[in-house]
Length: 354
Image (cartoon, one colour):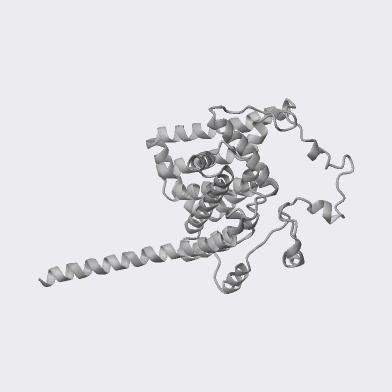
């Protein structure tokens, strides 16, 4: 009888503990999500509309999705500059990304196209936030530190600029998942890791300009290699064994990456063949003389991080040009964490991560 009571009591304690952990996890995710949605509710509810280049992305995606719903893949857009090849603009907004198909699903459920687009890019944004948390946990090896990194990143300027300048999301979200799968694969080679970073690579190659990712890749990987030489040496034999035993997975993953070069190649061919002209950009270039670097306004115009000093960063915040995205903002809590961590010992991986 006592054994039965112990078993029942033990199961009850285990169930309560499990529910408590689930509740804590829900609150850790739910509270930041709720605060974020509250802050951006005017846009999510349609009281304030998307603007600037996000609106341009919306127009291109709508043209693409409307054609796709009719069973047509548009190779020509008659509404831009009296007609032009779509290779540049489709690659420009990454419409080959399967995540855009969510718009069709939302729209088919009766949601307007505008809200379908809005909710799709918001979900994509949250997928990036989840990936950042997992990446931070993988690199730092500390759940609490990864959570604080997630909070700081969530309430940085990345969120603020999303509804006016969506290009950073097109670039950084697949890049985050690429590095997460890459680092996870190096720690423990698996089929999911291999498929994950190959699909992330494919999305990067078909979204906007992959050269930006290449810049980050060529900086991060050598630094991580220098900091983790012993780890890499021990990781190479398992990776070789994985490649030998999972040869089909490796070949298919490589094939997906190779095919992903095609949209960019076709877009490049469009420019070489002079099928696309952007006179509004050419008109902004000062021929021969270039730009006078003593004129801060010309240098900083349309720059992603043109507010370069402390005074710019924290003064005249009511005059920030959100449409041009001419600002960079770091949450105030970042400095609190930085001060609290002054006395901590920093290793090489933490330095590179920072």
